[in-house]
Length: 263
Ligand code: OOG
Ligand code: MG
Image 1 (cartoon, rainbow, N blue to C red):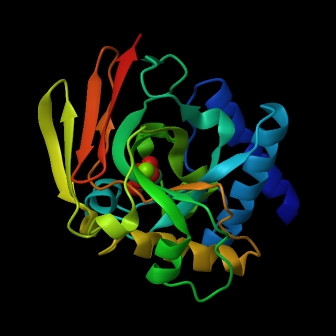
Image 2: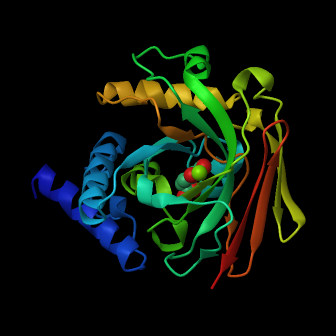
């Protein structure tokens, strides 16, 4: 098979798995060509297909596997990034049905909302902070299309880093007003504390993860744009969602966010 056919084939299968809610086996089992570089090409094709078929467009980006707890949980020891589309956003206060998901999990995240473009290929933490309008508490619902969330780095990149939905809280903070490394986080499920963490769990500083992504995007001729949102990557492991679960995340200095799931 020629390269563009393989890219098309994998992207279509991933889209079909999401749309019809079934799991697929990881593609690195069948395609030796599928390295990380190739996988970002599949991801781009998958996003094209989603934008066309679901009539939606880019809203921002996300980091994945930026904390030790997530890397250890998934057995993948390098960060990834993916795309957030407008139709993935959920609104705080809305009950979230688990019906569209294959085997979704939820994660506590920090959302960065940009009011300036981030240009160039030597982006620093300071560049990210200067382009950030505000930060807000967020949750990401991930829903790998792979059987039992079993994947390699290249597989997860192709699958848009397991992206499914995201929710951004109404409360927010300014990056000048908090120490993003020391910013504490408490994650609760049905009122019980299930994880505690701090900003530094994300690559030492959450903005470092975003700078890493900005520099990777530059290699592919892409960038973060004003108006976009970027999720830092989870500050703890991810937790399986059951219908009727309630999750809340609280961050020191920027507020909290809750979500109620239903059948
Ligand atoms: C990959 C996506 C990880 C995060 O925040 O670390 C991610 C996965 O665990 O399925 O979104
Ligand atoms: Mg995440």
